[in-house]
Image (tube, rainbow, N blue to C red; front, top):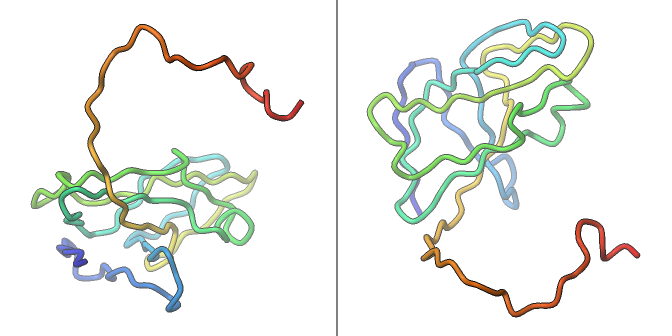
Length: 143
């Protein structure tokens, strides 16, 4: 499968897999910024991703971000649809400083990771009954 990427900024680095077995490719920012404690900021990547039709890009925090950098994806994960691919539809990474001190992010820092997954669209139908027995609510399997 091919992933087409348009570079909006000449300093933007194309993503890549760091090991042969990597499930995700890393995403870097083109901005340098010092985040205040608990601050949330949308970092530019300088790239437009053209996700193949029938797929989406799942964006998540890198596993080392919390411990090594004190940051996390502010929204948990990001979902990039295949039709978010206009000439200026740049990917931004919404990052939160999760510490009580300032955190410096440098241009070129890899601050997220992503993978491409199938996105089947389903037909949504309302039903009157599920035909299933209730399981007992949240946490019910731990009893």
